[in-house]
Length: 206
Figure 1: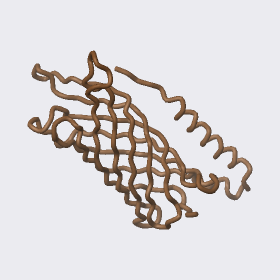
Figure 2: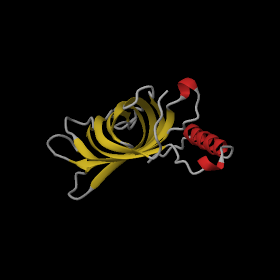
Figure 3: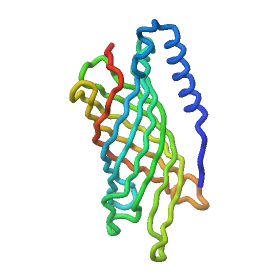
Figure 4: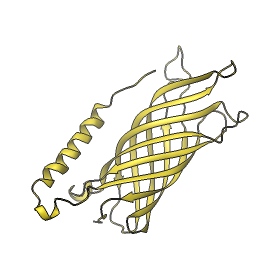
């Protein structure tokens, strides 16, 4: 089992949060209670685990931090943390994997010049577990990998601070089947998530 720390991501989190709170200290007291530019959401995912032709379904949760103080073209740059568990819809005839769990984080960029429609792209890195049934009854095998994800989607404002989200992700699970030949047998799961996000702050466009 491998778990790799991600110092660049940790540094980015530290810098963005430090910049936000440093700026908050110099605003007027009347604005000190303004909500943080944070978004939380949940949704339902359907993924192809890339092992035979089956599909797995399950739930996803995410939290985004998108600071408002970034200038010019950097406005819309933020950080996303996401967790997903896929354990529904398993069919032994379609593929051996019966559960996948992924927790990841990284950068998110939203195009903010549109008012009620916001496309975005993202790059995440994290940790994943895949489970399947072993040869012995009741015995479950699993592999753990550092997972790299690219994706994107769009949010559409439903009402006030509630937005509907459509999200697509493509993942890399390296060396998944490799034993003596590193780099061979990687998995590339991909899929869609439909969900709802709640923005604790009023989004601004530029």
